[in-house]
Amino acid sequence: MLIIRRLTQQPIVLALPALLILAAVFGAPIVQLFFKSFNLPSFSLVNYQAFFFQPANVRVLYQTVEMSLTATGICLLLGYPTAYLISTARTSVRVVLIVLVVIPYLTSSLARTYAWIVILGDHGLINNFLIDNGFISDPLPLIYNRFAVYLGMVYIMLPVMILPMVSVMVGIDRSLMAAAQSMGASSFTSFWRVFFPLSLPGVRSGCLLVFVLCLGFYITPAALGGLRDTMLSNFIYAEVSTSFNIPRVAASAFILLAVAFAMLWIVGLDLSGSHGLPGQSPKDERGRAAALIGRLLRSLSEYLISHRSKRWKSRRFRPERSGRMPEVAGAMFLASMISFLVIPGIIIVVMSFSDANYFQFPPAALSLRWYYQFFGDPSWDGALLASFQIGVAVTAIATVAGTLAAYGLARAHSTVRAAITMFMLMPITLPAIVVGIATYLGLLNFGLLGSKLGIILAHSIGGVAYAMVIVSATLANFDRRLERAAMSMMAGPFRTFRRISLPLILPGVLGGAVFAFIHSFDEVVITSLVSGLSIRTLPLKMWENIRHQIDPTVAAASSLLIVLAMIWLVAIYAAWWRTTSRTQRIAAEAQN
Image 1 (cartoon, rainbow, N blue to C red):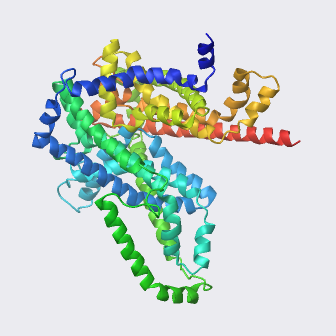
Image 2 (cartoon, rainbow, N blue to C red):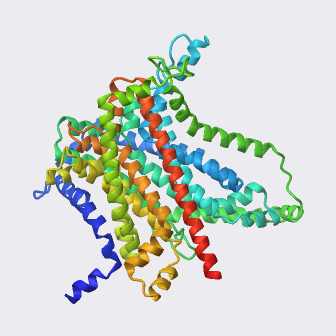
Image 3 (cartoon, rainbow, N blue to C red):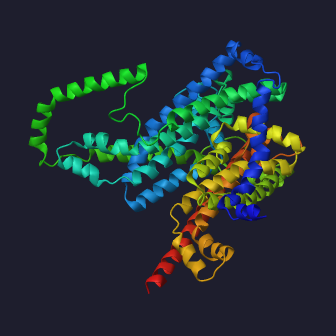
């Protein structure tokens, strides 16, 4: 009894509800899936051999990695200057710019993909404009090709690249660049030698997130690409839909998972930058080559040192002259990137008020026809109701379990916290098709396939991860002395949490709830695997409509999702403002 009492007093116990859900729905099934890929108990590599001995499979795997790397590179090229310009803007302007980046990020990825179908289609916005003005006679092939896939992937992933870099760049001390310039360094040199190295953690995080998420893309290649643009997720889903040979599917899933883990290992091997310190001897050919290149560069630097010294002496007290051209160019680039993120959503909202039977922009006449069609069709109403019911249930489970897990892990040992956090983040960091197959197997074990409870549990593992991450970020800045002060006044642990801790971390809790709801409301891949034929959520209904019968009703549904994202953003801001006011009031009372 004493051991049990001591265990229940450990903070890590608070993470047990989240761990139990994750282990039952995803953890145990992913291990079971791994065993099935090797045909255990009789160990065999036949499934992996069958995959790699098919040239078409290898081509799809190579194509998946190539497309993911290309999309990540494009996002980095566009996202880094965008993040830099946002971080250097005035505080008020920066807040507006971040909001304009966050709104597309919170909007359904299915709605954002649909926007590019409307823009790039044979009868889409661009082709209609060119034909109506006599520039072309036949539609340009802007869709169902690699260009359209890259455009859709970059559009969806660009906020994921920008936001981590902005969070890092805002915290960089700009006086370091000013100090470098006062010592004679040019603007570019001070940026390259001072600012850029300090921003690398944000670059690593953004690239890692974008690449891993791109590996699991299913909707965008299927909606915007052709047969030659298939990614491994599409290949796996097609195999699940046709034969569902679990060992073969498991092998394909773990090959995709291996690529994701390889990138996690390469990028996440040492984020502190401590490797490569002076005095370490390289142990392989790459290390010796890097050392040789380093010695050559140092020799070149020493050879040019006299020239650099003279240049520094002549420029150290000379103010650098820069005209307004860089500022104008930066403003134009930033405006183009924000327009790229925002305008497709605006087009969808405007087109949803069209009175025409087809896509028309700008609309010849405004009407609520397609909203009446949306709310008057039982199939759309039923899908919307099912999504709200599932989303609310997922939000409740994820908020409670994720908040408790974050609260307990914040007080646990760092090693235990790191291991459990890595496990709990797997549902949102691994490719969605892998998570979906494992979840399918887990719900099959419990007999919950094709039920709302099964879909709720399948969505909850990702929702718990989002809630835990956001609440943990809030707890990182939480002053625990307030809790100790309350307990010293004879307040119990529950009352201290309810009266002190919870009000102060409420923005994180609400933020986690918002992201859990959005995750559930936007989920397509996992839902399509575990829902069966009896339950249709709004994303599944939209996906079926996009694939078979595109009409402006989808524009009305997409517009509602965009408005929903804005509502959630306002709710988060209101909670943050209220909590900030409460914290300032408590601090003022403490000083008095």
